[in-house]
Length: 632
Image 1 (cartoon, rainbow, N blue to C red):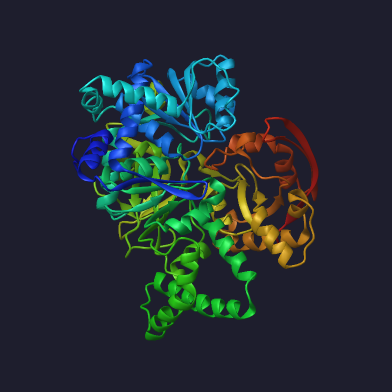
Image 2: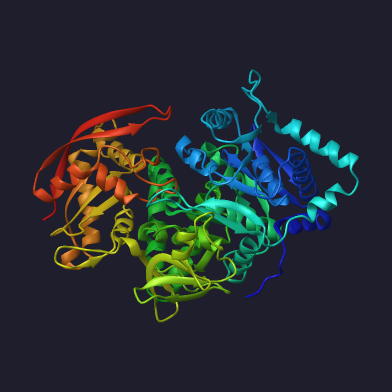
């Protein structure tokens, strides 16, 4: 599939010329939604680019973006790409070590910071020797006393850019024509599960090609209204909020802050919604908590219709047609129960809803489809610039990620690794020819995932090929595949399965504190902290039930025999998981080596000392005696 060779900037200027009243961006500030039309947005981006160029920014230099989703951070992103530079978004919670690694990859001409906290981070980076020529901040609160070198407010920089545009006729047209399809649209990073994250530069052609592939594959339509809440450093935000939104001219709505996303989502009621399974799980938990605190009559009506809708949805997933009774209950339930819930959580207008990143739990999947949110699953990764496979509305299954999207070729290596080729495939890891050679061959991307195609052409992803291991008896398994199914339980947030070279499988579990805490309060189980709750025998029985359900689906030689509930969550600040919550297995297995030995030695408890990193950056040690439990 060949798409027209254009840039995001050409689409931006086209929308500005053809949609004078179209809304490009809405941003909520102090409770009020502020709108920006496409002409206004294009003017903002162009003025920022003019100012950056005056500061000496150009091709080969980077603008590091520090903070949560903000309109000006997106405008800065497009502004530096207009100059053929690198837009490098980072996670808001990224540590200084992570940022220091990023700053060593390309010259950081500018750090664009959301607020005082992020400015402090940039200044600390600079003080540590990192090159950051200029720092520009969006939110001026708390910045009055700062006198650092080359520190500017967004408003100040924009005034300079507008003055330059006014004084130099033809400057805007020249800036708009600079970027070419092969120039960088974004500088992202791999998750870094096995080491430092690798730099991934995606071109305008990559991002736009992936957007058209998703459009033709039915992932979304040309006219969507979306909520920009995904981390700007995650591929999902690049693919949707920047790539597709700018290409097709969508309206992007930016919540006031992460804590108000659910409330702001209700006000926006987006038409397209994509998120990781944990976000769908968290929303389901909120719905269940709301229902549990409602009146007895409302609970009874809710369970009457929801139980029947879920049963009908399970039958539909097994290929059984809906009966007349199912359709009647669907209509009544929609007006009495489902529609009010969808309205309350901003799900009323959704036409296309997707989950991706890892497997979604069966109960969660069935719940949303029973609610009337036609949730589907997809598959993608940063190196593909977006999505490579997705379920069609008529192709929904619990265990697949759908069929390859138009323009995406798929095949398998002899080892079962998924290989992909298409317009969205990146051209290599920045400054890392060795890693590039290992991942790309004749245009084919070695995804690192193992899987297979079913008879109907749908893709099943089993897990990472690097994680295929064997027990002492030679049984082959993928830990991540089992871990994802354990996380289908609302009580389990993270899991680490251990069994390579061992006689049996064991698992270390991290409870979901919100869901488990709510269950404990409802069932009169006392606790004082996360560590205390994690060791309660009542909680252990819930975890054991979750393991039994997964064991029932596994071969006899791969069932989990023993487990331990850890006293703390796996934390990205402690290096145990990535910012996208992927397990750093080597780090976890090294850090919890005494626990693993106790699991496989027959011990009934183990004493642990774990280093934790607090929000202030300080570290401490947590000690606890953990109970090891055995499943019959």
